[in-house]
Length: 398
Ligand code: LCS
Image (cartoon, rainbow, N blue to C red; front, side, top):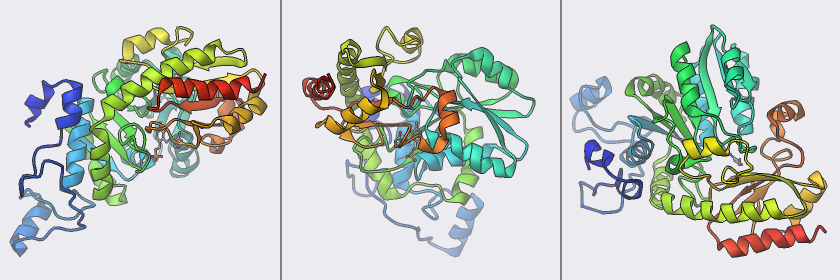
């Protein structure tokens, strides 16, 4: 379908049809997997013309591949972006973003609570090349304003944030970036394009670990950068190709397959999460629960304004802190003790010793990631089974 036709479709239709036109070679309805590293030229002149950019066509899979193009088209359509670049992993996408847009002497303001390696990559690696960063609670817009220096080039936010489920006001951040001439990038992994569209709220780049909701089946790692306009995409495209953070066609094919059911999965997991969050909130062993769908979430109003739904990530802490948290991790039966999130199955983990261990205790404390925080990624099982599983683990503590 043409871009203008796609733009008129609803999200259900888009997840099914964007990037999915029948195969021009044989009419296959499912997208063909072009598992090839290179593409033959008809003549030396054609090869030269493709390298010069004078003729459209494929050259080499690290540069572009028809299966990967389809995934980029699908996710760009879902995000309302001008184009996308599919990456080897979520971290490949984030590293590509930093590498393409930042130079020695530049400064970044970013959300203090976010996926640990997104922070340590800038703090411990990019700092070697003279890139500086300031990590703040980006929910506090005054703090964001006050952290911007003359050399700040990028505001990097993650909302909802991993693992605190704290939100940042994307439209307000976009306004600040417009005034100050900065780029705004949003890690949209926790919401997925079904629940939140950062580009429509004024962000320049929306990115995902497609390992999570977009693929949804816990069998692929991948990432994607989606751009509001092609000018920024062009700045990122060459460095992305040159560092080789590009996706493989088989990855793209699997993700295309997973993404077709994105909306149904997100909605089912979200309905389950609401029930799990209500049970947790009512349980006497639970000290606090953070879930944007609960009225008790300090940014419940922002969630209603900015997101189509609260998603399926919950964090909570028990009255007995980490010691009791570990017992729950051991006693759940249906929930699997594993990192990652956004898959069809419910996963539970302990960020301070797992996903966010590398950040260090000081950065975790500053970001509000307490030692007793347990993160739950609710999947698509029966809500009653999930609630019963969590409840039996909690009841066993009393
Ligand atoms: N962004 C967010 C918000 C993430 O949660 C992750 C991974 C990444 C980026 C990086 O993506 P990857 O390279 O793994 O595809 N988050 C993980 C987590 O919370 N548990 O395990 C991985």
